[in-house]
Amino acid sequence: MAFTDKQIQCVDCAKEFTFSAAEQEFFAQKGYTNEPKRCLPCRQNRKAEKGGNGGSRGSLQKYPAVCAQCGKETEVPFEPRQGRPVYCSTCYSSMRQNQDR
Image (cartoon, rainbow, N blue to C red; front, side, top):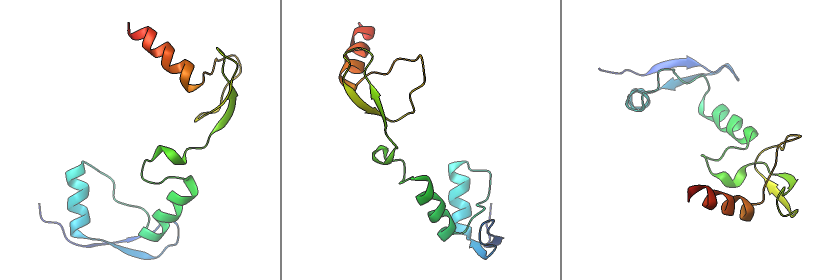
């Protein structure tokens, strides 16, 4: 399939940007069915606002918690819910090892 450059209007800033033939080919190879809605600067701004950095786990928001097993204070990458146990990494790892046996 031959791709040609396409002009798209950004939903955030309303400026037109080019969805190049090479980008369209890349999208097709990855199986993406939707065209981009935002220009590159707006995509980067949106990504920065969300705290995303390409899937690196180092940027996840951490929440304070107390381990349900040992009582140690810890931080977890999700917001703890009332009535649901939260474990520190040490206790969680030992529980996972015991389950795998």
